[in-house]
Image (cartoon, rainbow, N blue to C red; front, side):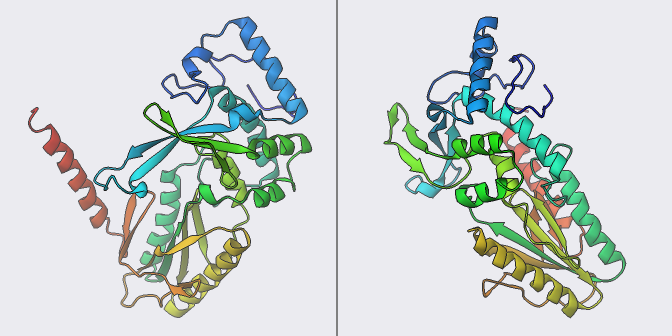
Amino acid sequence: MSPVKDYSLVVPLDPQKVPKLPARKAPGHDLITNKVLKNLSKKCILSLTHNYNSMLRLSYFPTIWKHAVVIVIPKAGKPKNLASSYRPISLLPTLGKLFEKLILLRIRFILHECQIIPTTQFGFRPGHSTIHQVHRLTDSIASALEKKQYCAGLFLDVAQAFDKVWHDGLLFKLKKFMPAQLYLVIKSFLENRSFSVRQGNFFSPRFNITARVPQGSDLAPDLYNIYTADIPQTPNTLLATFADDTALLSTSDDISKAAHNLQHHTSLIEAWRKNWLIKINESKSTQVTFTLRHGNCPSIKLNNVNIPVSNETKYLGIILDKRLTWGPHLKNKRKIANSRLHIFRPLL
C-alpha cells in the first residue's frame, strides 16, 4: 500500500502483506491477536476496511481502542519493593494499532513532502539508524582530533521524553501543516485515553492519561519527532538527535570559543524546553572535551546547574572516550562477551 493524497480512503486490506503484523505480539484488552487478523475471511476484511474508511471520513478514533493494559516487568538486580524497579509494558488493541499504521502511512508522506523532521533527527526515520548517527558524530570528532582542535561535547538526558509530551503543544504544532482531516483524527487519538495495570488476573482501576504519546503505539515515535522538530540549531555547533538522545558538539582551535558556542546553543535549548514543558536531567547529562591537547572545556551550565564533566560517555550504545581510542568501548564489549561465555561454560 502506498500513501495517497485522498486521506479519506483506505483500499481493502491484505493482513498477510500490508501492513506487516508480527504474529507473536501480545494482544490488548480485547484479546484479539495479530494471528487472528491474518486469518480473517474476505468478508471480515471488507467490513473492517469500511469501518476504517468511516473513521477517517469522520476523523474519529474509537474510545474502546484508546484503553491500554499495562503489565510490569521486574528489572534485573533491582529491589522488588520499589515501583522504579519495574519496567511498564503497554498493551494496546490490535485493531487500533492496525488503524494507526494506516494513519502513519499518510503522516509520513506529509512529513516527507513538507520536510518537517530536521535532518539532524535520525530516530524512527526510514533509511536512518543508530549506526548512521554514530558515524556522523564520530566523523566530526575524528576530524577535530586530526586538526589538533578542541571538540566540546554535551550529551543531554531528556527525562521521560515520551511520557511528558504536552498534548496542546503537540496539536498546536500539527495544526500548522497537517490537513484538517488527519489533524482531527490525531486529536481524537490523543483525547480521553486511559490505562489500567494488570497483575496476574487482577486489574487496577482505570486512570486517565492527560499527557504523553501512548507507549506501544505506532504513531507515538513520529508524533514525538514532530513535537521536537523545532529544537534550536546554530551554525557553530553540530546537533545529533536519535529520538530523545541528544548530543551537541562545538569545534574550535580556541577552547574558550568552543565553550562559548556550546553554552550559547545550550541556552537556546533551555529556553525552548521551558516553552514546551520538556525536562532535561542536568545531573545525568555529560560533558566531554574530545582533544589530543591538554586542558578541558570550561563547565557548561544548564538551568544554572553545571553539567558533570567526564572523560567518556555512552551514546547510542557506543562508549566515546576523549581521545576516541575505543579502548573503554572494547573493554566493555569484552566484559559482556566473557559474562556470556561464563554462562555457557557448563554446557561446553
